[in-house]
Image (tube, rainbow, N blue to C red; front, side):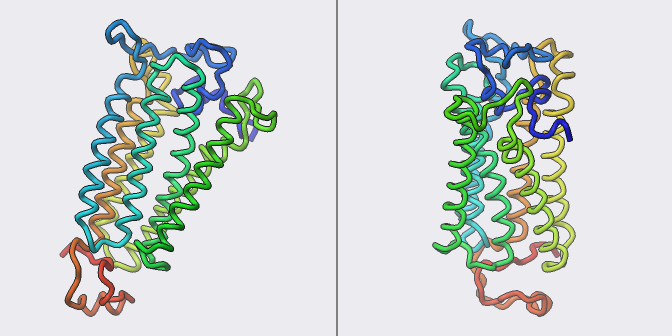
Length: 311
């Protein structure tokens, strides 16, 4: 566990939004006091360097996708967790906007770069938390779409966003010495909030939704979408943490794993939305569900209850 809390190796071999927080020189090509394993040079556009042009373009597509899925979600008026899913989509949109600036490689002002990096890191943590809450909403412990449910999402999400953002900014600007990184870029707070906490949230979402689909709905086919989303997200992380440096060297610094992490994360979000859509009602239910659904404990008069769309 000697590497626990350290970002040195991650920032040396990968393009992560958290790494600019450890930049102490005005030259963004160097991180801390060493050169990355492979410097991402990217492409020149109108004489200006865009180190991560591919990620910038994909983030633009991600933002458009979010707008489309928000519209599609709005049309599913009887769907369980419709507003809550929209909050998740908005948070993913914020992640995509922040990513354009934090890993785009075109900002030369270190101060502005650190601010966008802090927003990006905080948005990632909050988005994963919101996704976990979406899984809990599916069990109808609270009526979805109500003031209480939405307040839980917004208040807890805001607290997590502000807390994570402050730690990131304190790390980047050194407001205090509490989060000041050492030569190995050690920061326990960000390590937990940026790396470990999202993993716990994503695992919790997958487990809770798997139980809901398999034990409550008694269906297998939606698991293909849920499993597909998990696999797509995992592939993106492999590109970031394992393949990135090798891809960068092979491409002579033109691209690295960040491009494919953005791509596969976008695919994962689309698949995740398709999974949610596949197990929710599109329209208000006027007739009782079939007896087997009633026996499974479904509130058949509750509009928007989960209903399998598969034969």
